[in-house]
Length: 141
Image (tube, rainbow, N blue to C red; front, side):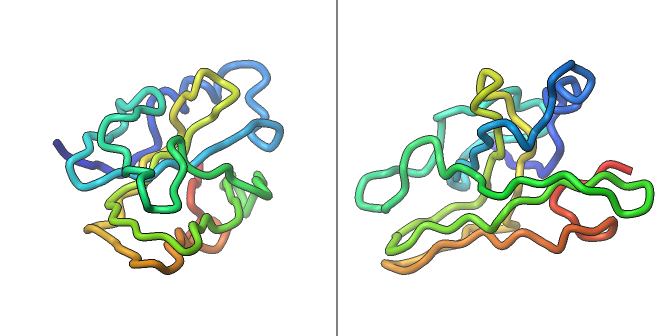
């Protein structure tokens, strides 16, 4: 049981497939507890160790990403989306999995929070970094 932040192998394969326009897909972000096993080989969304939706104001499968955009900064391609938040939520999570719901729930990236992050009847928010070549959430140089 370990979490390792990575762009997943399945996403790298999807990049080489026709029709991979992420801006036209339904991308989701699911949250996981500290016992989850998520890494570059996580091929698709999994329910094992996803946080409970019982009394948390979290829905199984996570939230849909909004305003997904692909841009470039110099020679680096950058993926960006609006921050994800769960209002009035009691959540303890250590990781998130971004995945493509339109492509057999194939995984895109594992985000390791570096420790368990919590909210108690408040807003649990994933704040994505600035979309540039040095800081973007997902960057391909």
